[in-house]
Image (spheres, rainbow, N blue to C red):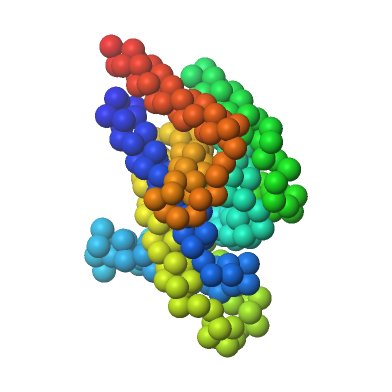
Length: 300
């Protein structure tokens, strides 16, 4: 892999994390969010699939449908894992604080690294291992005080969401020839179908949901889909653990956005959460510089 490929992959996956970080803020703007979880999931899942299909159409024209003819076991499995991550995130963040949900997502690199090693035989570079250890220290600092806030169930579901996304990351690395964007389309559809099933295949529950929640769910779908497009573009250049490590910017950004008075949520994180977020950010920056230096040395 050349230097430009590393820089490209680093940039697009980093930006994916930034896009996703606004998800916590979007959910916090919901009116009585805990009462409209499945309606929200339906709209968001449907919008994710629609946006990805539109993206494929603009990229490949009318032949975009050929991607769906290549759907295999890895696509279906990845779609199920990603749908689990979608669903778990919404449930978790409506049950507990954004900080608790987001620091549970910080487990993604470690889960991806373990599964990637056993399933794909991906060996961690020293720089990646160091960055992961530093990031883990940041997570530990974040949870010193905040692990007891919110509900234990919210934290557990947040961990399930992290596991789903980590396993999705491994699946898109498992079969590189499988069209990655079709996996995301399937995930959105699975999520929407699951929510509609829980709502007893009736549109009646949607009539009671505040209009702003509908718009917010569509906006969240746009943010998630945009991030997944960027994430998938970088997936072919980076191992699973490194992909998940860079996505930790979602954790840092998500805590920051719900805290800043500018956005009006004012969910103030503790000092330990702030310090932990800084440590995680530094670990990602270190990884970026270390990867670039290694690639330059290989090139020369």
